[in-house]
Structure formats: structure tokens, C-alpha cells
Image 1 (cartoon, helix red, strand yellow):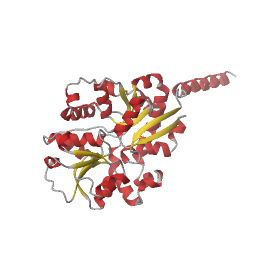
Image 2: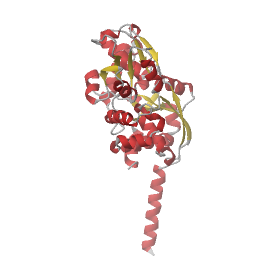
Image 3: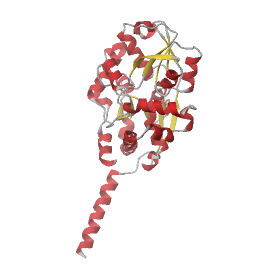
Image 4: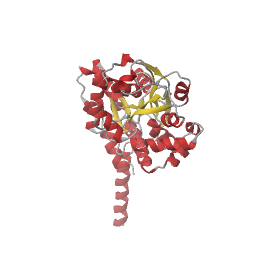
Length: 337
């Protein structure tokens, strides 16, 4: 009888512990913004959705897909979405403007953006970008910011070129093929499609760690999940559930093959060429975060990049510690196996 009581007490203790770690989200139904969901930059979001990881955490997530990351940021500021999967640099820019927006988990550990020039255009160095029409996902998005940095290193300002928002996937391919742009700063699978078609030559490549370090001199975090601090404070269990979802997704991606990825994403993401999409997935594989934790040196690298070409940020005193709330990913590492 004593043994039964001890077992019952142990079960109650375990149940209480489990419930403490798995409290119901305060806002189970929420809206998430993203700028170009079909891009491999945001693959963790698509995998989480397709594998049912949101439902596992008791979440009903409506995804709003915008033309670029700057648009999803605007939606967050305007209140039409609750959280965003977007570039880490947006948290720094908004902190500089006095808006407390924080990342809670890193999804991409380097940008996975490449800059490519149309093959019939003369190009010997970044200085040749002057006067070009350059396609980016959307003005103000991470693809635009990286291009600004590349030009700044060559002594150029953003006004020395024309930036054209070309969206993602199909519209980006069409813009290059129709001759509407001279160069492009973009992501997979667009890059692999353009390269195979013989349309472009890549001149800057952060799809690899080597290329990222060559450009920035170190690491440079990419996609994160971010939200307003006020939302985080009011909905800590919701943020924990979301972080658990993406932490589990990152663990899945560690062992997933290009075939696994191609079989999971919606068929339309393949753009009619499964083999090429798998090549794009292979090219992007190394860019996804291994731990979900932002590296302080990478945070500083991103800040240094922004201050190089943005006068508003050059004089700003941004506390980088306020751009990343690591509580949720640390807990996810304990909970998600």
C-alpha cells in the first residue's frame, strides 16, 4: 500500500512538472508574417507548418505572406500580425527607432543571400554596380540591406543604384529573364534556377560560411522569429510554444536530406523542377541554425554592417542585448527532444 502511495505521488509530481513546462498558450490563435515564404531562407517556417508542429504545441497559426521582409515588419508594427519570421537586422533597426522588437530564436546562422549579375553586363568589381537596376525581394528587406553593404564597401551609396522589388520565386525569375534588372540580390531557389539557366554569374555569395566570412569578416545571423516586447511579455507561454516549434524544426533539418525537404514542401515550391529544387535545398542546408541561439559576435557583425551605410544607425546607441531574448530557446533545448 505504501508503495502504491509513493508511485501515485511520483506520478503527480511528474504530471505537475509536465504541466508547468507545457502550459496552454495565452493566444493559441495568432497571425505570423513572413516575406517570401517559398524562399529557402524561410524553409523552417514551411517545414513547421507542413509537419504539423504548430498543432502539436496547441497553436492555430495563420500565415500572411508578404512580398518581402520589410513588408512583414510593417505589418508587425501596424498590428496586423502578432509575430514575424524575418531578418535579425530588423530588430536592430527598430531598436534604433525606439521600438522594442526582439528575436527569440535564430533560424538562419548566415544570410544565404547571393548577388548575381546578368552575364551580358560588364562587371569587374562592386564599383560597377553604380547605375545598375538591382532586383531585391522588396525595398528595405534583407536582400536590399546586404546589397547596400556590398556597395558601401566599394565607396558607393544606396542612391548610386536603382533597387526594384521583384518578390520571390516566379516573379524574380521573370524579372531577370525579361531584362528588367541588371543584377539581383536574392535567395534560393531563385539563385540556382538563374545559375542553371545561364542567366547570371554570382559575384557575392553568403550561402556558405566561407562566403559569409569573406564579406563580413565573421558570422552574420539571418532569419529569426521576432515580436514586440509587449507581446512577448503578455504571452510568454505562446512565445515558448512558438520557440518549441522552431527548435524542433531545426532539429529535423539537421538530419533531413534534400529529398526529405522536397517531399515536405508544397509541390508549387518546386517550380516544376524537383531536381533543381533539391540542389537549392542542398546549397542552403548549411545556413540553418544549429542551436537557435544568436552568437554575440554575429549580432555585432550585423550592427556593424548596418551602421556602414545607414546614417540614422551610425549615431544610434543600440543595446544589442535587447535585440535577442534567449530565455525561450534555452528552455526549448530542455523540452524538445
